[in-house]
Image 1 (spheres, rainbow, N blue to C red):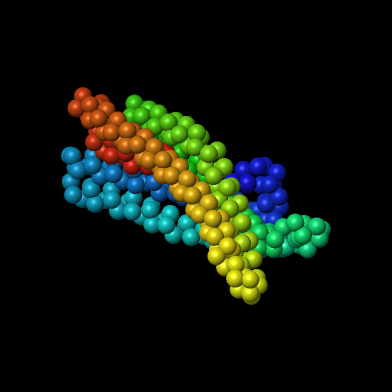
Image 2: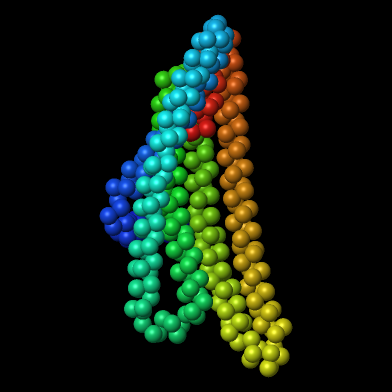
Length: 290
């Protein structure tokens, strides 16, 4: 994604006039809320399973109700943070479109002679859409995963450090796998965008020149060229899907290995009297945040 470049990201953030504070409070609030929600569920399971072992029904009910109240408080607050972040994102999108279209009006005429209007429209439309996703979705998800990852690891080590070592190992493997495929996915995604621009250009030419095409009876020639560009885009898109599927499969495999390790090692610790079933369930729940 182009926004990875710091200079580009700074230009995007410059469009967030008067909305910085709302955006920062929103994304940090959402991230911390997601972490707290995950942690509360983990402690709910921990207390539930341990209380079931030697407690009464009243104790179980009291424990469940306490954590449910905590969860409801977080659920009630999260829409506020979502509103703050998304309203800032909408404002930024509006400012960004103004800048982009203002820039288009100042481009030299040679640019428009060398580039087809459909190509320019396609690039501008796709880039703005991708940029909007960057700060309205990707950045929020990234920050949430970072906060949840760090926070849940700390909680895991506080609950049972021996079991926490396994998610750490699984997390390192996941980072390695995603790093290997990140550049490949970026290259393929860029090719998809370029080919889409070509397809849109050919489609625009076809529609604009439909009368000339029929007069000279060259429909088949024009369609074949369009079909060729469309097939090239389809092939590249399938390559991208293939790489995404591989990454997801590898991540699922690593997660499964981590889960199996926690279950087996946790069972050993329970049988040896070093921990409880509630702790194992809580660690498994927290693993989802790593």
